[in-house]
Amino acid sequence: MIDKNREEFRTAVPVPASMATAIAGYKWTRDTIGAAGGAVYRLNGKTDAPDMFLKFGQNAVADDVADEATRLRWLARYLPVPTVAQCIRTSDGAWLLMTAMPGETAFQTLEAQPDSRFTIVDALAAFLRRLHAIPVDECPFNSGHTYRLALARKRIDAGLVDVRDFDDVRQGWSAEEVWKALQNFLPLVPDPVVTHGDFSLDNLLMQQGQVVGCIDTGRLGIADRYQDLAVLWNYLEQYGTALQARLLQQYGIPNVDVRKLEFHLILDELF
Image (cartoon, rainbow, N blue to C red):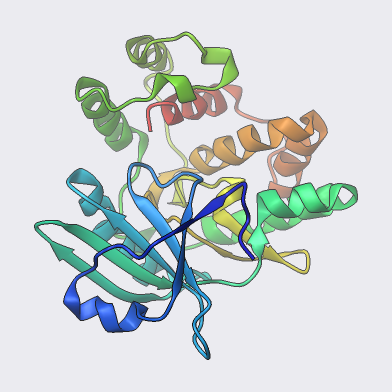
């Protein structure tokens, strides 16, 4: 069933000939949440065939789509993630075809089960600990704050930052004002772990009270652990400070590093 708040029906879009057979016979809906400049389609309704997801991007976004395929294949050794069925990169763009995973997003689960929100957050914290326990020396991807600052600067200079999407506390700020604010936190001494990079409620899938997988792994790489903590902590704000405190407690942080938390929240505005 289509979620009208998060998806909309679409006709099939052109794909490379080598992918056409794999997607034939499916119904298409487009994900209206996120996608970071690309497009995400859910393919469903094909008899005796599993649901699939197709991510498409052009220009710089095409590079991101192809990079995500590489990260998905690597992360699959450690955590449940979508299986890459095909990834095709051409001069016209990149197409990433993936298996659909079971469950609903953590956001949908929190909304549907308000009386279970503390246990849901416990499950999110447990999954985050599992991710951060992956040996750093086995990860070939860098997403540290120095690297992300360089990317952020390029995005500012290219006019790619959407200031309308800033958090309420920074509404009315320019991208340059965000950049200037970041400099006040430097230098920053990282505590490196393998991070998801966008550990949000929409990118975590749950079933029967447990996190059963994560999606949208294009930013995965070695970074300070507060990169993931800050994103999830910020998303939980809409449910109250008690849930935010629960996240930190269950993750295992008795004394939060407010400076790091704030830095990563501000940095995330530029992506």
